[in-house]
Length: 421
Image (cartoon, rainbow, N blue to C red; front, side, top):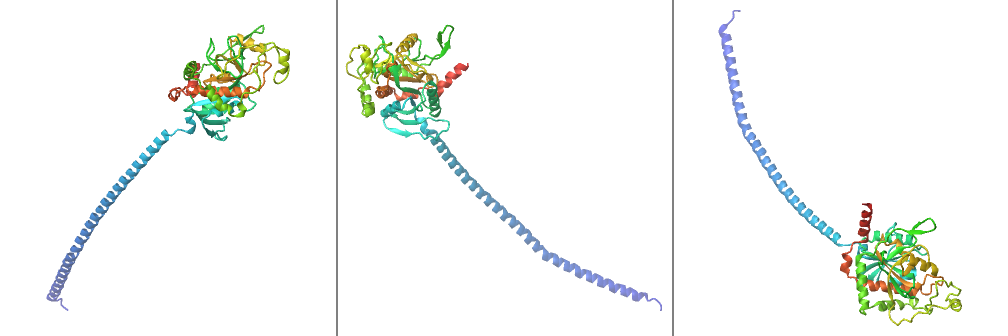
């Protein structure tokens, strides 16, 4: 069958027209879809922009809230800081109870402690034993005049310079603001032509010749041939106490003496009332013959005659006090030691342990004559006289002078530094 070219041409033409028509339809549909999608795109873009604006606004609001929170926190921190500063200021302003006490009194015997406690104008109580494991002292607190006073006593049966030094060291370490101390109690008097010392008198340590008020008679070295050379030097009391002695002595010269008044407040307790035993003095070589009241001694020996004293407060003697770890109970030994020391007014057993580590003044009521006739009958009254004298002394010391005085810790640390240098 012959090929019909015209038929083929017509078929191609028809197909082409159909293709063009279909392409035209597809193009129109594409344009319509594009127009429909454009608003959606704009809407999406607008939504994204709104979301961004909203997010930014939210962040800004969060930042503002955060700033406000920070400001509030800063204000709270500032308030807390001010409160803390106020608390610190309050802490700085409040002293520890122990820091209130500026005067320390040390006694060797319970009867001496009792006498001192009678002079306190209201006790503040006693220390608790478990407050400081390293401090074995027992303390009594109170006031004498305007002074806060802390008092301690050596343990019963423990006497001498070493025990006294231990008590003083523990006291000064605990009570950091103590300015000075007083060693108050009894002692053995050394009567002489220079010092008409009687039982019931008082001896107060005072620098004399080459001694600072107290001398340790048993410290030194034994030389060949049996000689003995004393070594060491004990410091004098602090200036505030020496000035007080001047003021008290001048008051007494003017007749302004309250010693008897202070003594009366102590002797209202029967324990401290003056006993019936007489004040009898024998020659140094007249050894005790027997009897608690020396009744046999009076039969065997003639007592030394002394001028009667007029009534009035006990006599106060100022001079050197000899201190050591031995009880002097022999008149000859007493006078020999006194002469070798340049003349002393009293013997006792504790002061030498304090003077270089606990600046203080020594006040001793005379209860015997450091001879073989020694007994305890005058001890309570002598302790009362010493306590009354301590109160008399403190009454002439102004509290401002105490505050201006270096603490015991400062004074002893300075001396240690000077020794080290």
